[in-house]
Image (cartoon, rainbow, N blue to C red; front, top):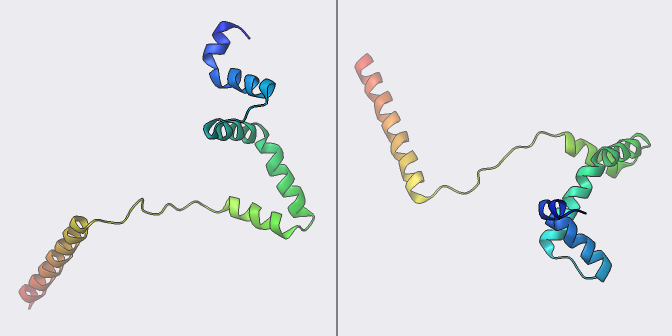
Length: 106
């Protein structure tokens, strides 16, 4: 590895040191290693799920169908009291306008 490559990929240099010395990796190193490995092997992993599902493996079929479902995001957090109060005011204002329109229409 050249000096430029070592500076560009410091985690790879550390991984080599970890393997040589037999030390444990830190959690962030484990996550990055897992992500790189999964990204590299993703096509084979999916192909394996499909093959197992074709053979009739129920857990593999369930996982394959769950991966195909669209992802729906939930709200990141609950609305605070100010936002709830604001919505209530907007709702009341809308109701008031509808009542005025119905009274004016009569």
